[in-house]
Length: 368
Image 1: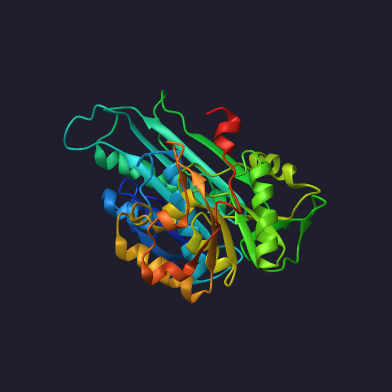
Image 2: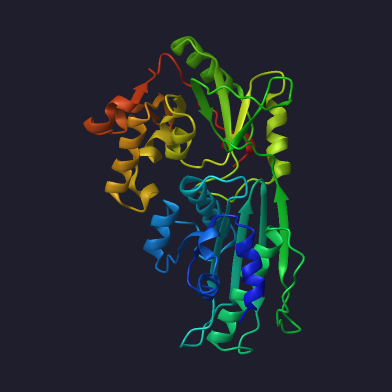
């Protein structure tokens, strides 16, 4: 058990946050909650134990359930929840996914992945545990200690817990920082400088831009002509399908826009999150992205969750300008072929093939 005075120190800082733990390490939740003062620190603690529960928590199925990317995605989602429940300059979110000892011998490794996000910093921890060195209760207690240690480090506290690792076990840890503004995003202007006062864009072109190419530029020009508004680009550090971008990778991609266009950097992986940041904004997307926006698979295979998200985007006065794209078989697909239901059809406006067609993708430019 963690000494109660250590947990009291965490609570005394009154940094409000959310924990999401898939099962292994959940003892940390009970230890935090049994020490007075938890209401100042814990806004919510959730244990999405089944795959379906985790899918719903994240809003999509992860590529791997026990992985560093999933822990980061859980921490990002937890941080978003914390900011929603009680906005604070020191909000934090913690995500932990683990594969520990069970009642039956396990063929794979006993391992865990932990991520905690606070402000512009994400800290990550992982380790492979020695099989047979502890029973399930012992592995649970070890991981609970690591979770509490991660909170101490995220809160810049000097205390260090005596964590009982075996000789062959190594705790891997890393941290990455990214400048943030209280609104959850920042802007790189045309000259490459970071702006502190950022207007809400009327038209936003989200993407990974790996790399920025002529098709992006052509579509941005067309959107500007069609809508009569300046087009801002958007790069999200968090991603629904892939690991979060590192600070160095973000800066590398931003270099492409210097002297060309302003870019917003956000931590909003889904369009609902983008809509909440930028109500009333028109999003410029390709038909392939529009397909994902209406696909229940990206909402935990739950059509009601999809409908609720699209209804909220309607209420936020967001909309989508959709450009046709070629599919894997080389067929040109536009908005009319996607099959948006009548309930949400007003969210989408399509461009004609005669207005825009560009068959080269970022993937083909990268060579795969």
